[in-house]
Image (cartoon, rainbow, N blue to C red; front, side, top):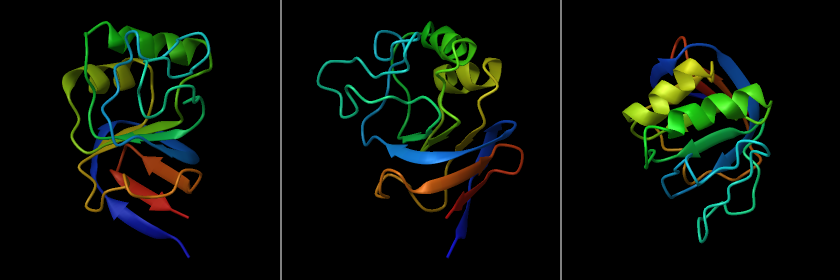
Length: 133
């Protein structure tokens, strides 16, 4: 049984994939390898995991504005997430999602941070809808 969660569309487009959840903020600069899509930040909840092709849910971004360009490099290298869901979008992640054409939604009416990794999720950045399978 699927259900829809309404949020706010940030970056246009649609993406679908397995959910990958982090309760911690993510820094793309020095936190994610743009060549592999693997989280490399020491001690991070997702350290060693790949974000490539996943629907990446995390509270918000952190770190330098260069993180936006790392997101663009991930897309260029085919290692970007299929979509991003934030509890609260901030400028670095929103800008990166827009320039890299990664669908993004924030402010979901129901948090996805307590959902199981691997859950099939579709994100529509045009309407702000998140469909959980």
